[in-house]
Image (tube, rainbow, N blue to C red):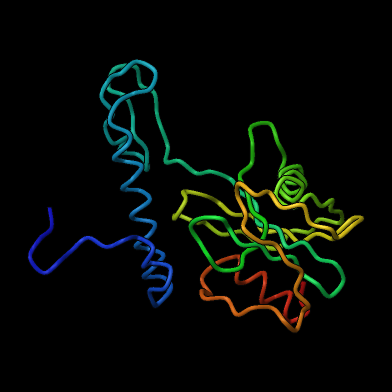
Length: 197
């Protein structure tokens, strides 16, 4: 329940909260709260889960199964074509320009995820993958890994219409301003704009 002087707000506010460490701490706490709230019973035997004590985990009182917080690996991809960068817009949710992104599937390497996500979302082939940086992203319980790669073949985009509303090539000097400097996406777009990627 809400306490006097406090109220519930959407966790998205942490995207823009400063200083950065304060916002990150808030959303990391929200992520852990979601996880702890969804881990009351063991998925193997149905027994009660309790805090593990030795580390951030839950353990089943009946069978001893240990469960750790959910962390989904995902890629963010800057597709380059010379002095152009491909940006996309989601169909729902986040409405600003973004890079191609998606979750890794079981049995798939990060490199395979990059190629698959770019092909699924835009119909483009890529080559020359290079790692940029990583970032924990508690908004979606993810660990993001950023890559740049080069277009391999035609630049004609075939949009995945059930996920994206738009995709467009931007010249290095015409990139749109990003609303948040706290994201890996923004860092990658800015790095490309400065000629560093």
